[in-house]
Length: 343
Image (tube, rainbow, N blue to C red):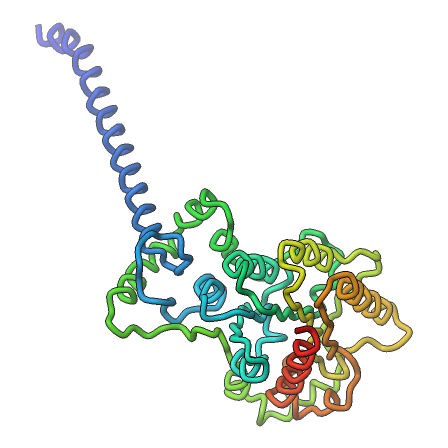
């Protein structure tokens, strides 16, 4: 009797359990979708990196953070009408000193460890937000710009989604764990009366970092300058994709916009030996950017990647490609002079 009863109830119990499970799955899915949409809406409205896409008005700028994300705010700041692009090889060029020398308010949009691809993204971002107000671009074109790889590979992660012109790509980029982590810090910044703000002009003096690491006091570190320099980018293909992509990007800018290409200084032992394949590659790369300058109006090349007396003093370098303030100030003087000729 009990056996008959159990078998007759089994078909009724199984569908009921399945229905309850299906209901749970549906409720979980709906809750997850609502939570995801809510998080995305909150991220869009909070605008954690101050891209200007939110309809809300907050405190100007962003909290102190790395230049890769802070550049989104700095690059659209109407207080600046000119910008410096590149990596740590042009990082010591001071926007404040250039502003004093030229009368043009400069911002530094450098990203240490970056390559040409990231610089092109930031140039595009700045031009999109200063279409009618940009007065100058200063672009550091170091050895990495000599690559023959059209993909322009990056060495370190970079938030390309933050600078995209596509709203869809931006929204997808917002769905990241590090963006969620930024919510609390962003809320604290936008609700504070006098919040600590990342330096508006983006200048990052790396001299204290090198000094604290012993580059001033350790003779062994300094002695490395007399050894061979960093590995050069050898490109004997005759094609320079970074120069080509930069030329294409600059077609979107007004022809009247002054553009200064800077080949940053390196210590003398970082230059290739004459007559070598590396020297041939170096000369060809220089010519590629000289050709860009010749084709575009109001464009100049400030070339400090040469053997000059100032670049033979080991006291003016931390390593083969990171120079000290006296060298930076000489480069700044040449940039200001080039701008004066173009304006």
